[in-house]
Length: 132
Image (cartoon, rainbow, N blue to C red; front, top):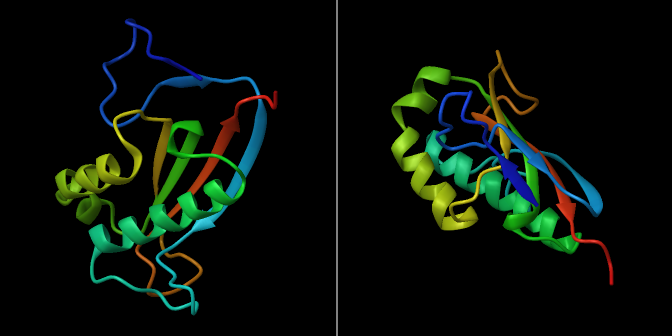
């Protein structure tokens, strides 16, 4: 996968401007902070982000991929100012689970998510290497 960040655009922080890949595309459903029993867990945006991202990585691994294969990510956020206020901690969660490579990313403020207790939802697209 090639992460593309043209010098004509502002230097990205926590995302890539574009990602190109060749292989099998995996579309990852939106994940919130649901536990295996279907309950929203985690007090606050940071804990819920960690659970939601972990859930998405479980689905990605089940499809045969890993964090390095994530090409695009959309983050739906109920309280954008809260997300921004916790950006450093969210970034630490990202590095712990994903490393230092960033997909093409959008953060979108929303009025609410499907589960009323959910504060954040992540949805992604991955590109796995072609099968040998």
